[in-house]
Image (cartoon, rainbow, N blue to C red; front, side):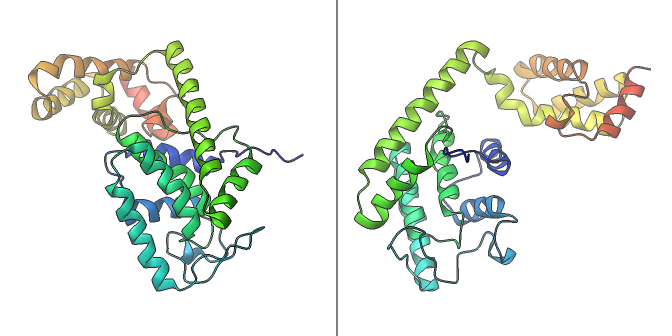
Length: 267
């Protein structure tokens, strides 16, 4: 029996991680939304040229009499207006719900509009370090019924209630996890990309321990405030000492690169 919940596929997981990793760069602009669609629709559309592009053809809504706008120029104009209006909304939850309702209603892409909307709602939340919204365990039938209310009746009450319920559930689950694993280290979160970059460079360049120490100290002198230098170096040294084959994908490194470096490091 087919699962009736909105299941997060592998590509959705990758896209969600991409939003998190690039939260400082993403925003309500064409670049972000078009590229999000490109990632989500890769290999799913009959025309690969339509991935990440505003649709040039008319589309229909399965199981509904609602007919989205059909003129490509008008769809393009409305898409830009949607982004402008979303960017002007200050409240992150209002902004998220606005996109959740409006983007599928416009149907700016030939397909995968709903999936884009469900992930895009997290952009304003991540920008303010709020708990992201997970659609896990949301019933497909309920979600579709809520969208049909928007499509056919211009009524948002069911979608609103579903949005609130799903977010409260996501926040509760996040809090449970936080109580178990603890809060993330703010210093490491701030310097995460730099730490990963240095560790990756040391391994790819096959540095031994002496070479790595010189490289680390020189990099810190150029880029890190003196009061943070010692702690920053400790984080790098901790990562290097803890490196094993099960951690290399997070940096990212190839198994061969890690193996060659490990032989030199442990010599």
